[in-house]
Image 1: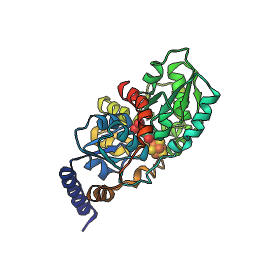
Image 2: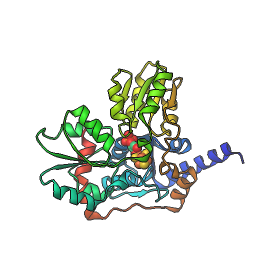
Image 3: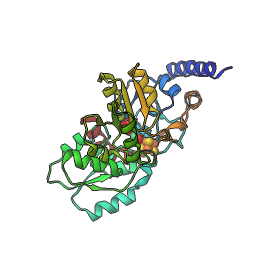
Image 4: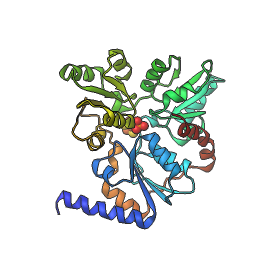
Length: 312
Ligand code: 13P
Ligand code: SF4
């Protein structure tokens, strides 16, 4: 069997099993093309959380990383949430533990805690607000200006938020190894080589706050779904993309005829790529791996997540 035939067979198997099991398949924009293509919904963290909260399906197969599946489980506790590979973690979520956050809170009494969605359920349970890159600005803007804020765990997103909200934040020094690896030099090289192209930058990038400093109207700091919407709406034919390379597939699919180039071809998240079509099939067939969240932690995390889903 050729690779293409195998993909088609697996795709059909997955769709048949999903129908039989009453499962919806949600996939993040960084998933491999064949997983994106088999999903019911493909989107960013915010869109997928909203889908998880709203779905009428009995089960959710989450093609993404562990914190995303946990968030889906907290939003839909009565549903079975399956993650096809439990090792699909996130270096950013691993950069702060609940103990570290408790310590940080104790050192800053009275501060409001805003956690990026890339955190464990335990960290969310210690947070007042949760946000994604899609609504981080709206979440900060919703908090009174004189209120001290602890923002975690992504320092580049935090620095970008300080610029766009004009507020001082206490920022945790965490980073995503994939986005931190996209450097200002990558942007400069590309902008010199492609002066006609629009530049789409994820705020987790090491270059995001500097990209703003380039200050031209061709630079856009966007969540992954924001990039898709921008590409669809723009009349520009060429775009440089500063985020994980998996998004190129979706961009090409949603905005056909345009040219999309990653500014760094090594921006590859090994955790996102752990989910393969075969593992999605196995997940549905063998009903594994169920993601559970301790009900007490889930109840405490729920308020912060509800605020995230409601805003922006
Ligand atoms: P988005 O919410 O923009 O999709 O980002 C998720 C993520 O993990 C970025 O690395
Ligand atoms: Fe985590 Fe970075 Fe991978 Fe996103 S790209 S899931 S932040 S490690």
